[in-house]
Length: 301
Image (cartoon, rainbow, N blue to C red; front, side):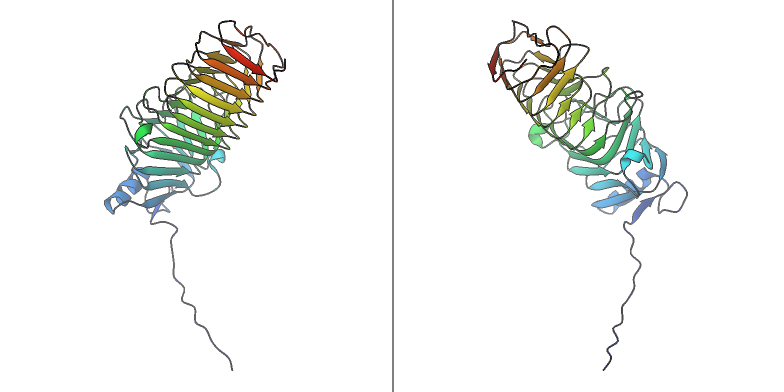
């Protein structure tokens, strides 16, 4: 006995919103696809085919942008401009290269959206990837990076995040962010970093809480206000100035870290807080300013 099984074939699109410069998609611009998805209730993925898109986008919660092929590192789908993020909700940005002369994402509102960037290449000529000074971390505002390329350091000056007031939460996993030394990353909330690097100066101000494991910080780090930090198995480097500037009134703990700098002192500041050094190595300068209150355990010069 022979059984015949009939199989019905249907044509299914990976997304109803496909953007293409050459006219092979459903839309010619990214913004038109975003607006169309929003008019139908959102909760959609915008699929962006290869090309350079010069648009200043108004992004919407739940309408995610995805490059159609490859990874963002290769710039197959590149978006050039300055964009307004959604003020609430969430958005995922994946497989894209983001380029801009100054800020890529800009808002002076106290937004609470969670913004996630994955498989991304950043290309900021002079400014910040996220200029969001009041983005509100206590109400859920967050920025998340995974598998990010910071761009060409010979061409980029990117402080990545400007959030000196809002307390935005930052999550940095297996990613590299920041380029150059012209702009300082400004963090005022909780930041968690694992197997990642920061390649611009980093400043943690009042209310900041920094947790870092297996990280590299290549342009120095500073603490002020009541910032706290726990940094383990990491390298903090700065060959132009002090590697660490300690002005926090609270405790900063460094465990099994390499503090690499040629400046004397390599750690400076004027602080009532405590800088705790546990098993740290100083391959070059080991001079610490006497105005910094330190405790040492397993200290190696």
